[in-house]
Picture 1 (tube, rainbow, N blue to C red):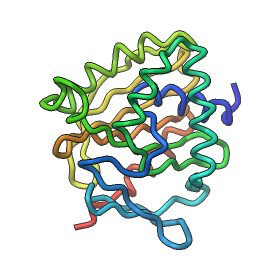
Picture 2: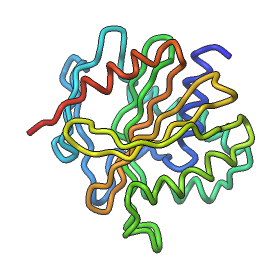
Picture 3: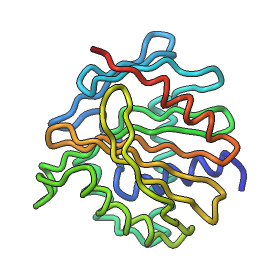
Picture 4: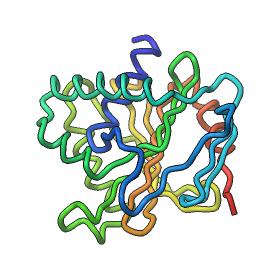
Length: 209
């Protein structure tokens, strides 16, 4: 499986819970890029970063194209179209960044749990326990849970779940943090030989304040 294909599949699988073309949702604020699109800042979420060499941010048009293709993969995998439409209403992307090879890549999205009946009190770990069986149930490729941990990014605590996909063709880390009623997700997809590049990207995320 080539890396461009992995990028598309990682976007599609991530969209099983987080799927939206919207730029903002109630309860969260998206960030902004510098004019040269090399630096990103989100004051609401209190993080900023400079893109490492060899990385780039997908444009709005590229994101829409990738996510539409991801939608098709999910529908073909058996995901109900109504479930996708509901997710559109309560979720927003902040950015998608990637190397030119497609891996590693990173996606940040926000889901407003106040819009999910009965989920307003769910914390990051509880959200993970909802997310995990949905990933394990995907039939287009096999997800295997590697483990969980608690990590600090830009001074904030994240609950992290790591999965191997299709026997380790690539891996996905789900960094989850609750901000108010919103779950912030950083989804990082990488291979064994690009894990260090993914770690370097995360290490470069700093607090705004």
